[in-house]
Length: 304
Image 1: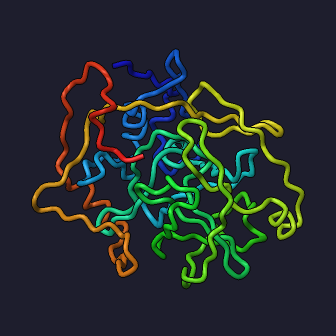
Image 2 (image 1 turned 120 degrees about the vertical axis):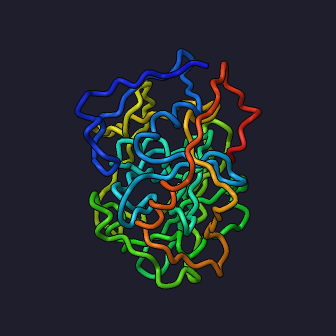
Image 3 (image 1 turned 180 degrees about the vertical axis):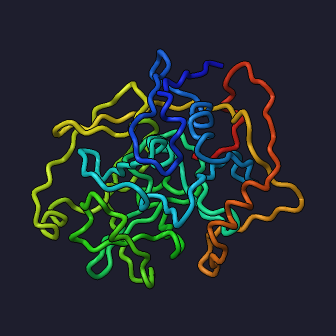
């Protein structure tokens, strides 16, 4: 199995996962691809990998406070491929552009790795004077309209329409009082890798009218260097390699005393505070994977 060597400056090791930086860099393989091992190795310093029943290895970010994917420490950029989430986390190149997120009341937001890159794996909507979006859950995204899937109320974020293009978006993001009236925005494209559908988000002409701004689309330019999205004029350099898979070197796992509480159904209600969720993650027993000589995509239990 080929492994990637991360070129990290020494000061990076002093930063925690909440630091805003673009300092994480590395190179892809000769064919422009990476393996799941890259996800596992790169994200391990910033959270814990958990062998989660039914989903395989999922990642729990070690972040205090009210972390929400596609809402905390980042903003929306309009690109030639649709609305793209630009994260200020130095690990943001992976969990916001590959895979799926779901919320477990006992452990918080958990990320399932995926094979295909998109500007953001979210569903978009609108209600009253708000634009709304929510991370896609496991297994969602195979149909042109996500098969009619709607996220749990807790997954939705909303922001006043005239603030959707704000650089400091987190100051404006709230949860909808009721998600029942959110009208889903059906504006889809397909990914370059496996032709999976993703939502491009709000119509740019509408956004320009609400924000009273002229917004020029950023042209995505692929980068072979592992780093956050980097703007240069009207170009956005993006690291989006093809992905293969083995398993993490170290991971936490459930035993008979642990229970899962994924928030998926309408009747599910989150109740546990983030500090307790972090303790729950850290209390799971740590396992070490046996050495693997080569990637084995067929053996992965991870959903796309």
